[in-house]
Length: 116
Image (spheres, rainbow, N blue to C red):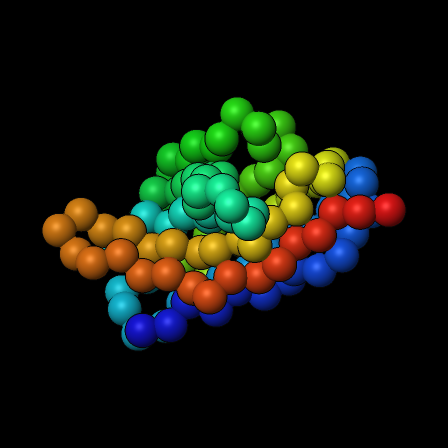
């Protein structure tokens, strides 16, 4: 099983990034997918989630209207489009696969730095 995040990097405030998470080794379309983020000394925070078929999404209040989660079940990939980035969005972003009664899977994370 693998979840591999990509797309992180350094961006100026107000800029955009698109994160990707490529999944393999499990039935991707049976899992809800989530993006979390974490900064040093803080707990991991849920940023966005999408249902297994993509019909339902939800977001943390701090990112509503700026971030969009989506998925492509044919490509076993989940995305996080991040617009109007703020310095407080700086964090390591993690991809998570979740299915009731099954174990969760986690990626290793990708660093997003928002700074001028």
